[in-house]
Length: 544
Image 1 (cartoon, one colour):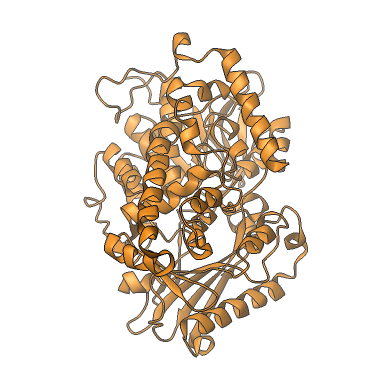
Image 2: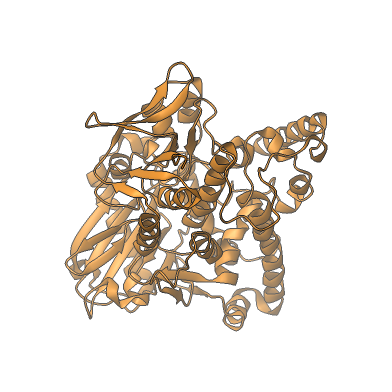
């Protein structure tokens, strides 16, 4: 019997554990090395005396990708004992004057909410907005999230180019929303979600209205027991398939054969060497290229590419319940645009930040002791790559953020005594994210998702500088977010299997092996170059 090919996965984030399980099912002998003593990366839990906090993601969106990964592994979410709860309403969105918009998947509820601000015609405009954003989502799933972009030629697929203008890449999310909603309040309600990918709605390409659509049409969900239940499920499936996990095992560097320029394994910080035929890196991509791999001009360029934002995150154990808050709450700054400009242009914390408050105990009572609440507050701030955040007194900055959050909550919702109800506070800052998770510049969503940082412009699944080395995670195509990283893990593993001429266990019957396009399936190179020149010209024109 031929020896099974071996793979080492560096990092046990969502992309890493999913890739490990997929590789094992495809026939690889897989070992996962994780620097921390827990799996999940940012998708991990913080526990304190019966209180449970999701350290990172707190909204399960696009459930199709979660269902798909378990199905591809020969099981299901339900079979792994994971219960997914629907959050209703989606959010309460609070404005500066105390008015609140309750966003929901229920059309009757949304009709009443929208007509408060824009009359009967407003609901018709909302339905038109949903139609456009539905198109953004489904086209993106088909032509972006399920397709690899390994070179500029990948953008020459006729099936992709035929739809590119329908995705509105040259208009902002805010600009597109303004075509449908006349009131500033509703424009804000339907654009703030670009923060999920670390972009300002004034800069995010119009396609990203799919974020709001996914919530409004498919709902917001939550795994009972916390988001780490998804990780636990994937780890358990992987272990049944033979995946070995080594925690507290930080990597010093990836071993690269100097003659073949091929990855041959890893060297742990302890000095131990592990051999492998394939190395998959789920660590932060910019960190990995600059610290784990040989120096290259590409690594230096990646360090200079725009990054997403960071956050100050508070985890509060409260002595009582706060009924004024739902599971998901958004507090929008009065100076809406300025709040984004401070983050993305000046890499700072806004004087009046917009922020998000999650109360997991509202939807899952196991998140806190009876009669109490667990609360997570995320205040977006600039990353550490420049501006004033890199020189901040973080103790003072955290105090400022805390006071702003508490005073805003009390003023807008009417809650009282919140300070006295906090019996334990845990805080993550940009420096924490950088130190604990090796996130370059403390950017919690990796590289930026602006137009020239996605598709073929984003780092691809295969390392172009080192053979047998692959990437998966937020800074790799297709991008950040749990469902997107799950989609990315399938692309990465499919790439590996194609390179090894191995069967994909999850491939649909009749699917031909490999994904390379034949010459006659490509748009002529001259046309592609013309299109790319047009894209650059339009982008420059917009910026000017």
